[in-house]
Image (tube, rainbow, N blue to C red; front, side, top):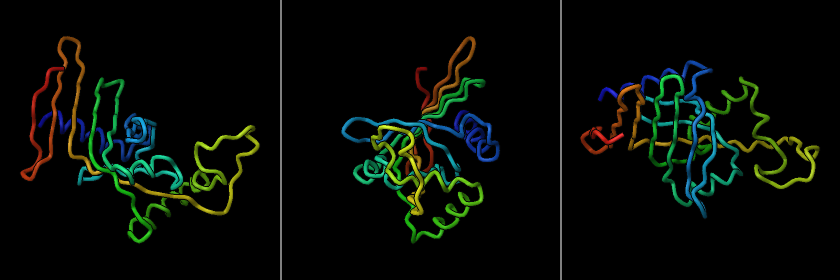
Length: 178
């Protein structure tokens, strides 16, 4: 479990270090085509869950509603560490007590405006002057429950790759060809 622990140490370190490369990750969802985009990780939890936020009108919301299977890719360039995670994403509804906690977190950071554009993300416009902010908030926290990890550690002489699968007995480790 050495490489799983290495990955977890970096994921947890990124919770406290705003400059850590794991604060941004690539999220893949299933739409008409596989869809990928960079999102901001808000937290990695002890329950192997990634918390992130989006605009509730974002295409990824409908994609996740249609098929919650998703993948996340983290890369630490200095440590040459790649962490690929698979799991199921669910929307955190307003009825969940954490919703208010996350909304307050955004308010305190001054980032609430990011979720108040009058037009949904990806809307076609002809001029940047058309981007304006309204009073409505389109905030949607999400969580991805991780059930698979693929970890690659690049080295000078040898690379290491391990897979971890969560089953009813805990995490199972497999050594893979890098």
